Length: 160
Image (tube, rainbow, N blue to C red; front, side, top):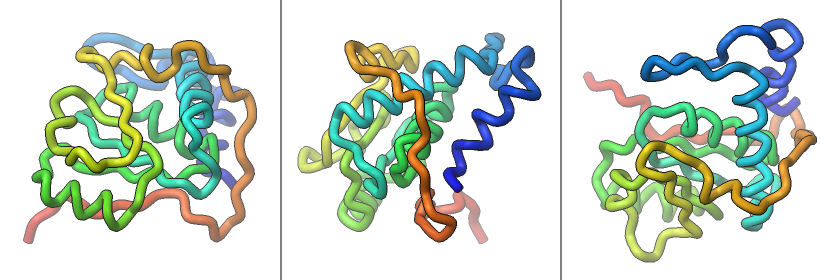
């Protein structure tokens, strides 16, 4: 089962409710799913294949969540990374996880070394237009086996 199926199945039950409320803005299920599918298409157009890693190094935003589900939708492994980590820590994760694509925001991009994988930077307001421009929307979901890797977390963010 592909974990992203949960998002799409929820549309049958919650289509008229917001999926995300962020900074006073509600994002409904159809709008959010469209963004996820356009991002997934953008990832595939940039060479992301099932099993590849997509690192997400950005602050909280609806686009961050959409990138997470987009990675899962196209069968990739999501690698969320805390944007508060140092360049050295981010570098270790890049070397270890070997992402084929890194999605970041303008503030977190400074944590990336120049030898990072292919990098896409979200706009200053979290805008994804640069990722989804002129790429086909992905309407399917890549099937994954029950024991396939879906997400790699390098830190829980807790102390003690």
